[in-house]
Length: 114
Image (cartoon, rainbow, N blue to C red; front, side, top):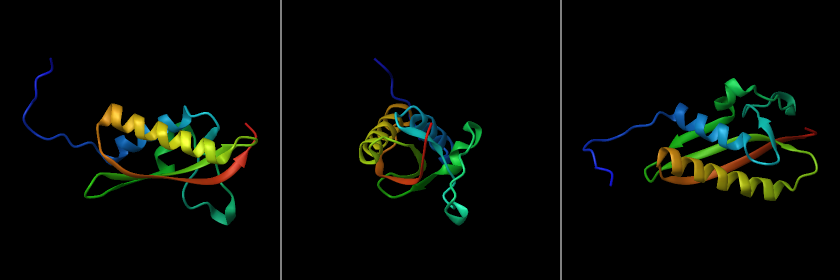
């Protein structure tokens, strides 16, 4: 049985964004992440090393709010992929960081052929 240790643990938002980014890339139907401020409606895929730029983590009183800006694979059901992505992100944050989540919002920026 694990012992409880006195004190508090603070996880940086960048670490949470990394966890979310890698969870998102494992989700079927997600091609990649894109920056929230897509200029002229053109969504540019971010390389794996810069995933956190496509994720906004906002601390709130009850937990954290996560917004993901994603590119979805052409031919997949956007609603299903979004729901699976939400579930995957919630699971990853709960399993690895043990942080309460108030909201997960998915912003589909583009659809592409993989």
